Length: 596
Image 1 (spheres, rainbow, N blue to C red):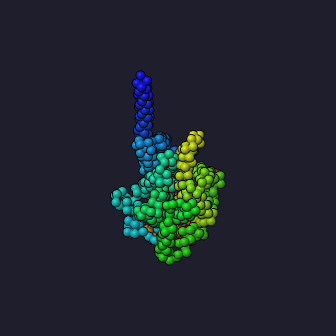
Image 2: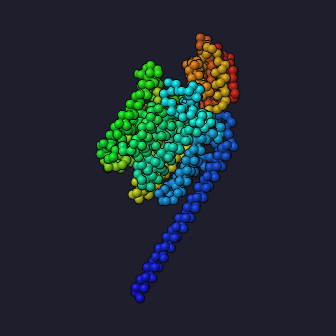
Image 3: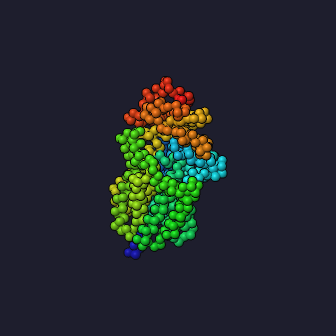
């Protein structure tokens, strides 16, 4: 009887276990269904948001991208990003493929965010270098080669060739390239995290840390440096994945080094610095097998030197090329440039603008720095030692660039801080370590800071009065006005400008070669002083003087920077009734004045 009774008990226990397992499976299935409904709703919300934006196109110059775009769009973007990371965070490593749906939602929402101007009717979101890069691409298409003055031609080559292959043209390629490269950046982060550690909990932590969209203002537009910075995670994955024993990955690493050197010299030098730090760090910690060999570092230096010599031969001045490359050419220093910004915006406005730009970077940098204390306790054996060393030394090198070099725009150094890439695995590690130790409160605080940075970067990814700069988009009316100036200009002329540079538009319309063949468009340009004094008092020896004013200048100085008082609304009004200057062209968004 006892034997039979024990069998009955075992069977009952087994039945309870199976029933509990079935019940848990049902609960998990219910949760998955709720998550699928949430994902479906987020996709519908994003679709409705895009349709709403398309239904409210840009009709002229707009002061703020965020105010002119329906609120539904920004809600949909943030909701989709959070839903995507929830699915990835919840299901990665569980055997359920919903993590792939989450990754797709992250990629899609970011792509839609970074191509907003396609739906609103923007042309570009940045008024300077991006237009010249399109001009370089036009030179390639028209002339069959890139000119020697194009020191980093990779973006122009890609733009020209893909535009021809796809039949979409260079302008369309320039508009979607940043979004495509940012998608590659996100995939690169995922691959890099798997190469650092195969632990699903670390991978989900690092992916969550990668959600903030750093590099404000420069992400949505075509910048060579931006495209190169976005490829750094993929490059690090290749290094971590290949080590020194895989010929295939060594070849890929060599090709990536070529990409960086041809792409942008500052990023190329940063990559060589990182490679050197990795080589030294691995020898100090005795890591085996090593990720970096001395030969790949030497390859990078030789290739960079060869690229410098090639351009030096084109301009017959090696010293000038090296000084330009290192930012040593005397001119406007980083601090001088910053002082110029302060004169336009005021000290308090400049400080506020900088803080808005760097608040997310500052949070991540501090988290990464303090996370180093955990790493340094076991630095000889810790897998993150090399990354922390690159973060510290790379940050020190960037500070040196700020203090000791010339010709680097302070906002570009802030918003294109390539060292921020290294904070992502470090912050991800802090979150992973807190989860591993079971410190839920600490993990939630770190996750909350990451989500705060995500929302912050969404609202600073476009240039906007929120960061004390008017919307930097270019309108078709500005292009038409510049085209009139180019064709109707006098033989002896000088051009007075505030912010709008006609030669940039000339690059966009006709290519950079056209501008070089018509140097008066560029070299006869000079900034006008406060209240247009230098333009209104110019003497006749300068020939015909033109003044170029767009709505961007009017809005910037009468609203965004009105406290500075450099140009007032009365100054702009008085020009129309000035007896010394004639109003020769207007299309409501671009105005041209002339005096002889």
